[in-house]
Image (cartoon, rainbow, N blue to C red):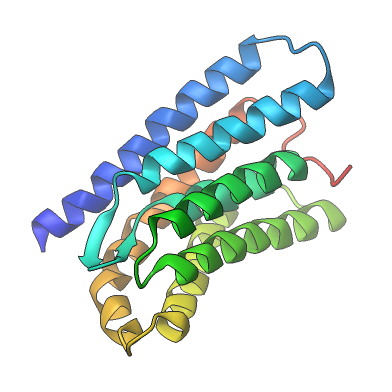
Length: 198
């Protein structure tokens, strides 16, 4: 179990390291136009997700988990929605390409994580709520609960309950903390906090 938990820690560290590089690069580079910035940023988020998917935590043949939904849900809260769509398409396409029993469910996790992030963003913007630390943690919890519920239902061969029972503790203990750290990292570089949907 300790080795299994360390796998989640490793996946989380890869995510945080890559996003730190992304944030440093995008905040220190002046792009010629907003369109170019969106495409470059979207592709960068997609490549980060590919790197995470390339270092998964294997559960069964063709079924694995990683921190992709932590990345995409946080991006959906803080980044331009076009960036998130581009990154999400790259992530979903690569997961589908990897195949296995978890291929299609893996695509669903991409969609659900982005929708969760956008839903939170909508509420935060509409009601002018400051995305404080405790809300960031609650956000992380809700994303993990949504993913666990999804995997419970959609994994083939009746493996949903078994997989969820194996990953529930590390997902609910570790990933919300990672989500909070990631939110703080994004927030640090955005004086206006969560932006609107323009």
